[in-house]
Length: 475
Image 1 (tube, one colour):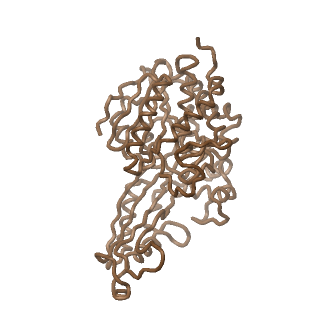
Image 2: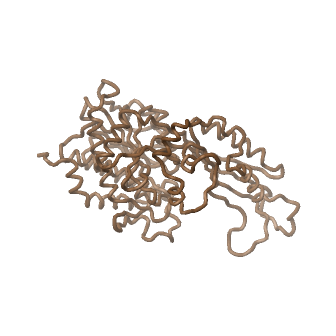
Image 3: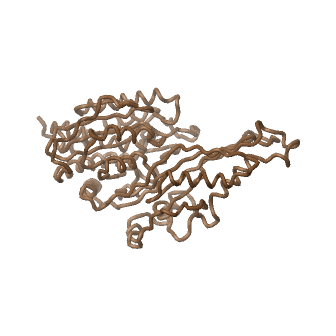
């Protein structure tokens, strides 16, 4: 009855897999916008239905205070290890819409790429694992290991419901290794395993002055301008050297050894490669570090948005009553987001002119992640990558942040294999996002091979795989 090998099944069904991924991408599952809440719900139900269809034993759409988490498991191998597969089905907003060459939620295939918002981040990458599960279940009727799937709908807004979910459901989420595909490879022929990610702190700074906008001819020179005050505060967050000028900010930054920096240089991108990926010939930042080091082992601060005053065409003679700035910090071991938040607020208070008022609101916090790249499960992941891509993976650090991965490490303390199937030019978070379809096929193969490799590893515990996930998560 079951004679086809999973890899052969996956290859024979690749056209259908692409068609299904196209359907997955058509859901405008934008977690940041209330008007897309219905789309998020429909996407979660579609995903749950698909998991049931491929043969997972138990599937649930678990409500949270925000968007639902889709859970599925197959626990038919009591003597084998257990893998948690994580992914997120929510996506970034698609604007600016006029810069897309095809509709962002159409899932259009052109050449070797599938275009659409979420195609790479993260629907395409997580879908590779679903198709690996299907390929095993449809060919042998079972999986080589126990599997628990956790697919969330809030990663793009900082995963606010995920850490509470993990805390409440910890007993039912016992596993040997967590597999996450939500990152990039250096190139299509060069697979990668990420072993470190920066943490994050996202803030909104508001500066206010007069109760309403004022005529600058009547009041200019006697009323302080909140927009200028905001600019002065923002300029005081950086020193001219590129370092962040907040007192105490670097006190707990982990000092990376020269040996580790040498390893990073042998595995990571060069300055030229990073500048090419950024489409620039000018670099900036903290002196004494390569560009790769600046984006991975050093913290950073980005002013990602600023607003205030007249934004329309032509002049308008006003002193605006308020101004806003969006601040995004990336943090490294051993920085604590809560401690940095307090330092930032104190520094902003010192910089705020007495003639104005400032208010700071925290949106996202996430801890940095550091993984032992020598762990046996990580080495098993590397072996699977090498077989699927026919090239040894590089071990890289990421400058990005995944709050769910940080929550996994802090709450479950389970080894995490971060295997990226995206490419640097996938345009994630930008118009014309795309997923390289050969990476979908090789990602499926990697996942199949990884499950078989993990099946031969010793388990962390001798008891049966835990399956105590409650039917309903209490928000």
